[in-house]
Image (cartoon, rainbow, N blue to C red; front, side, top):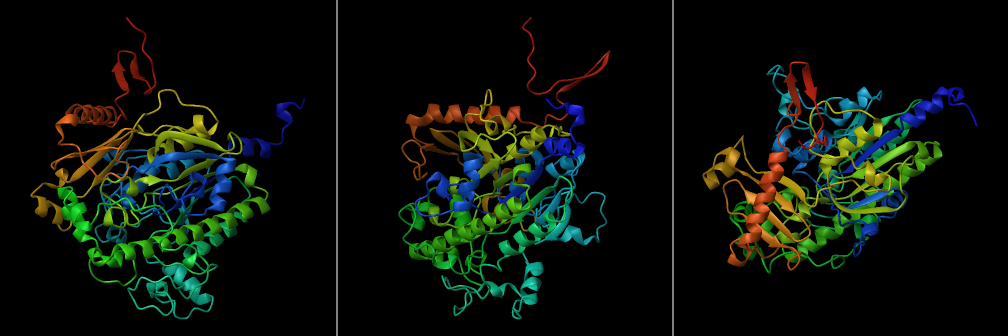
Length: 526
């Protein structure tokens, strides 16, 4: 047997410090994988990753939209603690995050895409242009290739490839279609020239330059709108493909279900989903939603194809078995459910997201986990895998016990997420409801049986998921469910009490100096 001291130092480094590849695909629904049995969406490359890793079937975002969701993903904190309430809410600089922690582990974490992190303005000059956008970079990352929503870097790349008309996002308008038209025609760029292909190529080129273990975050914009995709993905799915929409008989019935829906649904506009479309979302019919959903499905298959390109590049470089891969999303997409598109509110369609972790050193290949898991678990998982500690309390827990093929003791039996609909800049929600900004929020606790939605100042909702998986009948006011409503309200209250910021709560100053204990410490009975 070889003496451990004679092992080549490079081998030791590889063993202790794997390559880390964190991939997010913006706005990807958790049910839209063929690996979990979707009715039509085909994702062979993600399925291949799942066969070599661990698939988490009930994984949920911690918040919506992008900035709040990513704050939970990057910090391991619930929104109640990180307080990124909407796009444009600054992330408090005092919080640790996965990029800063990776630096402490000896990596230079490198970003391809975006993190949508609004910087903490305290201590910054008022004229600093970083304070004019929420699309900042998470502290700790080295930005190799930025690609925010304006996509200018990609557009200039397209021009270098001969697309002289790639001067604006009008490039997304399908050839032959009118601006704002729902069309399954292809845009002028090819499947080798998408934003996804551009970022994948930049990552592959950078990866070939590395001579030490690396940490990369590839943050794809797709399948985020605008809904448009090149051949062959544009007509890969038909409008009548897929499961039935989860929605009330009509839009009016949906809006009448709750005051928040009556407020929020009319605010949705077409232009957020089809480039240069005008008018309210309510003008689109059920057939229009079906046509858009088919394009959305094709966009996921386009991303899947580029993921296959990345898998092959890692294998060709001989680093596939040295690389831990995490594939997930920030939040999901309603995709026509409940007569709406986008993300936000309280329905599962906005928060159920995919998660696959493939760790060649520890993985139980093909593992499937049906426990509820949260985006807040990603940072603790990476800390656990790399043997480092976060510098503040975390709300999530490490998923490594599942990745290793085992179970985690005392795992959560319900999932929790939040949505804050305050409008600090314009005050629209506040005026509509006659509320203060800190009253414009909701929290959800959901398990196998029921889903309870608690609003700070609006009526609650309760769904019996066993009988009503599409979340169509609110039973919160039904006297027969009064005890259940109380039970879940108490569950939610207890969860929030347990997860108040714990950074210094586990420390006590004594005559012998500070005594600290982690959340898992057991105390002997007296």
